[in-house]
Length: 195
Image (spheres, helix red, strand yellow):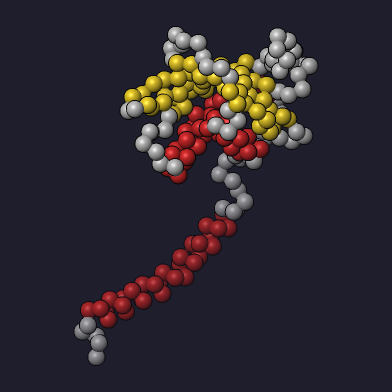
């Protein structure tokens, strides 16, 4: 009685196709899952370096992308009229530590808290114009038995190219770069960074 109805005929054809494909697709799914174990990671885990000189080059390599994601996320959540800046480069690490006592230097073997100095080149936007700024960072890390922890970061800012003296150091431990470093250290500890 409904055989002349196009919708009824289409439903019958669709049911016939689903029943015909059902066993084959189930067999294919079983074969696929048995040949690719769920525990096989896409990228093998790496061990986070325990030497500062091995850790920092990996951190600085990835820092611009981490910092830009932090910046974009903050801009999306707290939309302002000014566009967010971008970290273009991070580099020039120096490992010779300074003490917090004015005028005294300390060798790397005597230092209790691992320190590193590095720079970032950033593009910032003010009133619709783009400016490049050189940031100088003094990063303090703590090494535990099996991981690295962010302790403190001080930063100064200078224009690029540097024809004016940089600003006085300020605590930048809650800034974009510091948040990016914390995220990167977390991912490094999880073994999810590229070696």
